[in-house]
Length: 64
Image (cartoon, rainbow, N blue to C red; front, side, top):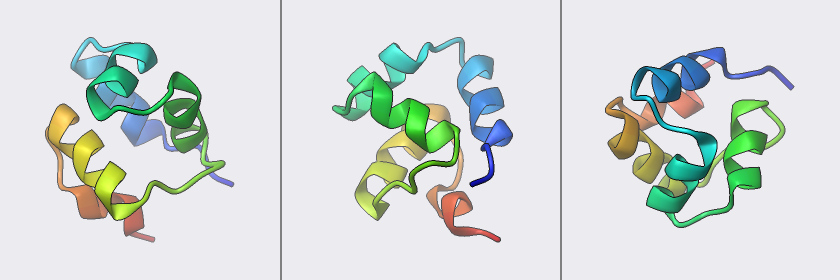
C-alpha cells in the first residue's frame, strides 16, 4: 500500500484535520486515516465527497 501524500497535502492546505474532513464526509476519522495511508481505496461516492471538500478531481483516487 502506498501512502497518499498528495491527499494529506490537500487536506493540510485547506487547514482541515482528519476529524473535520471525516465529519464533512459523514465517515469516521479512521476511514480518512486509512485512505490517506493507502490501506483503503474510497468508494466513488466517498471519493466525490472528499474531492468536493478539498477541491480536486475525484478521479485522482483511481489514477495509477
